[in-house]
Image (cartoon, rainbow over all chains, first blue to last red; front, side, top):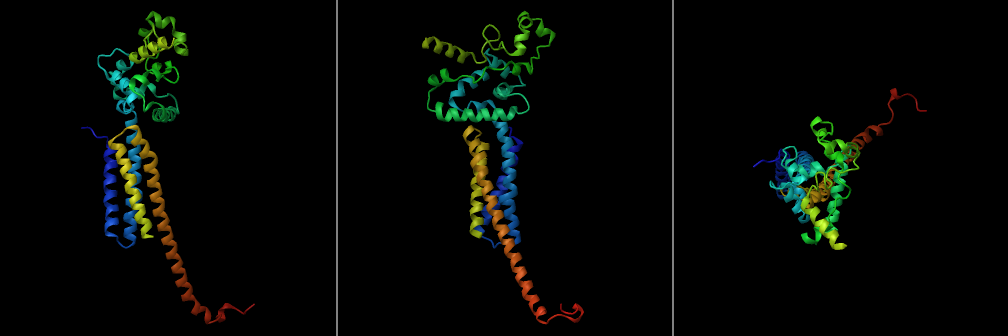
Length: 213
Length: 88
C-alpha cells in the first residue's frame, strides 16, 4: 500500500505529541523549565508540523477522483470517468496517465496565476450547494439539476492540444473552426465536435429539457 | 496556571485527532473540519500555552526585581558617599 509521505510525517509527529501530552496529563509534573520545553514540543512545534503536513496531504487528497466522487451526487460522474469502456471525453482523458486518478481536477481546475485559489473557492461553493441543496436528493432527482456553472473553457483543452500541431490542423473541422476554437466561441465539447465530457448526464439533461417542454 | 496548561494539552489532543481523521478519511467534511475547527483549536491551545509561559516569566522577573530592590535598600540607607560630590 502506498502511503503519502506527508501523511506518514504527520502521523509520526502526532504520535510523539500525543505521547508527550498524555505523559503531562497523567503524571502531572511540576512546571519546571524541562516540563515547559516538553510542552513546547507537545503543544507547539509538533502539532504545527502535523498541521503543515496535513494541509499538503489534504491538498493532494482533494485532487483525487475518489474525493470528488465522495458526495453521492458525483458518483456517476466519477464512475463514468473511471470506466475503461466509456468513450466519453472524461473517461478517455482519465485513461491517460497524465490525468489518471486526478482527472476531475486536471480538467476542472482554473488556469492562471490564481487558478488554485479560485478552484478551491469553487470547491467550497460545491460543499455549500451539496450541504444545503443536494444532500437530501436521490441521484435521479439530483442529476437533472446538476449543471456546469460556466461553459467548459476551450483554454483547458488548449493547454495540451495546442491547436498548432500540423496533424491537428490537417483535420478539416479543426482548420475551419480554428478562430472560433481559439476564441472559445465554439466549444470543443459541443455536439457535432467531440461531444459532452460526461455523455450519460448530457442525455439525462436533454430528456429533462424535452420533458419540461 | 497548570490547569490552563492541562486544558491546552486536551485541546491539542482534540485538534490532532481531527487532523488525523481528515488524513485517514479524506472526504470533504473531515478535511474542512480539520482545516477550520482542528487548526483553530490547535492555535487556541498554543496561544494558551504562550499566555501561561509569558505570565510565568513576568512573575519571575518581577520577583527578581523585588529581591534586587530589597538588597539595594540597606546600601541607600548608608547615605551618599564622599566621592559622590557635594549635595546640590
